[in-house]
Image (cartoon, helix red, strand yellow):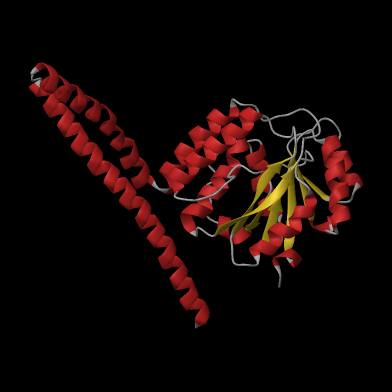
Length: 303
């Protein structure tokens, strides 16, 4: 059975009355069955629930705290299909891309991320830069090569999140989902999608980027603690090299020998290089784990 035939669309919302109406209209136009849509309401007061009910979709209250993260988790628990597409209710993501995402799942992936291609004026410069910085940091920490880890539209194989820890809240939910799959199966793909200006007041602020970064660091400790520990420890290499340069500068130009500073710099440099090497080794061990897992899965399927 195709992923598109075994699919639920989950829309977490809070006060998205005007945007949600447009989203549901476009879902109808795309040919997707509204009977397979779950709208998870996080406490709307603007009539969002009433709009959703008027279209006959399943409307439920959010079961867990944590803002959007609680809504996504609620929708995943209530879905009765093996595959789910998460979609924001603010009209930024065209529902027509639902089909692009689920078809990509059929190629054997556990997650397919919709990489945002913003229309003119849809995403401010500060958000573009912030998204690039956070995605780059994520790729370094988790050893991935993704382009948009914070996209709000993505498809999932529900079973792949069975052991997710759900530690992050709010707008960090996307980074946690990607972190979990990147650290377990590593089967993540991306497809380009259109990104439009949202309908209604913008909820994501630049300050949220700081929290998302903090959550990414915390997630790296949860999913790859060895790499995180030794990466942080390797930062001692920076003051170590600085002391080495200071010692050599004074020795060569002034013939002044700061023996203690030179010794301390050498020790810090050696420790920093060793811990950095262990961190890189831990990252490659994680990738080897992915390869072994896939080899075992292929062997089991071929039996």
